[in-house]
Length: 291
Image (cartoon, rainbow, N blue to C red):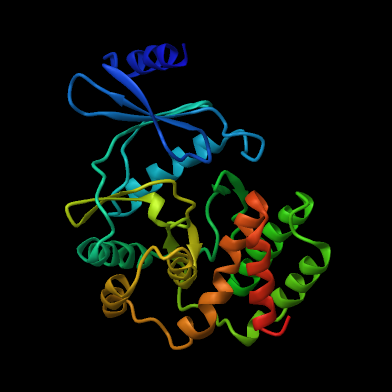
C-alpha cells in the first residue's frame, strides 16, 4: 500500500509512474526507496520523519543542504526534484563501487576543493542542520574554539546526557575539557565549508570515481574536523590524505593530537544515538588529554 501511495506521489510530481519501487538501506532521516523509472533516470525517495530522534523538518533541511552544495560548490550530489514535509525526491546516482585507491584520490580532489570554499561570516551556517537525524545548531560564531566547544562538544554532550546515555560525571569532564581547547586548537586561517558527515555510507562511487555525496550535515568549520571524521571509521587512508595534503597542507599535530579531539564530536553523536561502546571511546579520549 505504501509503495502504491509513493508511486502516486512520484507520478504527480514528474508525470511518469515508476515501473517499480524497492527499499534501500540507510536513512536516519527517513525510509529510503529507489523508484525505477520508465525513462531511464531512476529516482530516490525519502519518506517520513525517521522517528523520535528526528526534527520534524529534517527532510526539508537535508534537501536544502543538497541544493546549497549543488549551487555553491562543484561537489557531486543528487539533483533534488522535490522537497516536501514528508518527502524528499532526488535523482539516483550510479553507485556500487568501492572506495579503492583511485576513488580515494578522486575524493581528495573533490573534498580539498570543497574545503577551499570559505566565508567571512565566521563558523556555522545560515540555518541549523541535522546530523544522523539529530538537530545540529549553527549560529555564526567568530571564534572556532568557542563554536566547537559550545555548539558541538557541549551541545551534543548535553543531548546525550538528557537521553540517559552519557553519565553526568563524564559530561562534567567533557565540559572541563571544552574549556581548555586553547591548549591544542588554534584559530584557522579561514572557515571552510564541509560535508559534515563524511563516512563511507555517504559516499557513492563507481569505476574508481566518486559519483556523489549524500546525507550532508554542512556548515563552515575548521576543515580538520572533516578530515578527523574520515579516519574514525576507516573511510579514507593514505590514498586520500597524500593527494589532499598536496592540495591543502595539513598542519603538524593533526594526526598526533587534534584528530582525536575532533573525533569527539561524531563520537558524541553516536553516544546520543546508540550509547554503548561509544561512551567508552569518549572516556578514553578525555583521559588521553588529562580529563
